[in-house]
Image 1 (cartoon, helix red, strand yellow):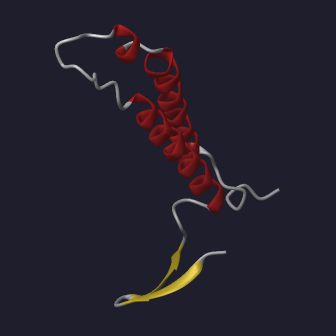
Image 2 (image 1 turned 30 degrees about the vertical axis):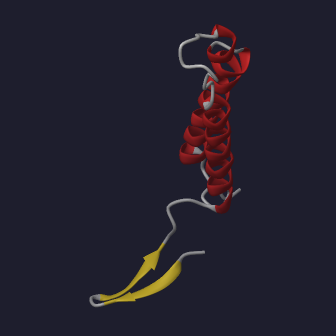
Image 3 (image 1 turned 180 degrees about the horizontal axis):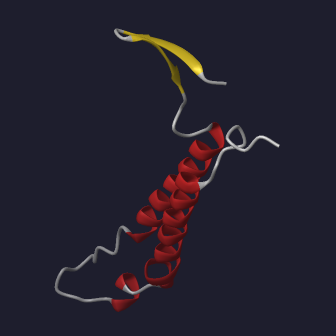
Length: 90
């Protein structure tokens, strides 16, 4: 249902841009992006003069984290473009 909002020029119908389902998809996408970024951090060496490739190029940082970030971005797109059920009456 559209809400009535009074403005200086009179009352106009107010229709929210996104529905609850859209916000839910966008929130899940944001959580996946943040989880991917958290998995990427770290890799500090105990000795700055020694390079340990297993810390920097681990499977978690090179594969899992970017997949989570891209999945989160895809869910953000789904959340933005998905039509809410209120807009599609049967």
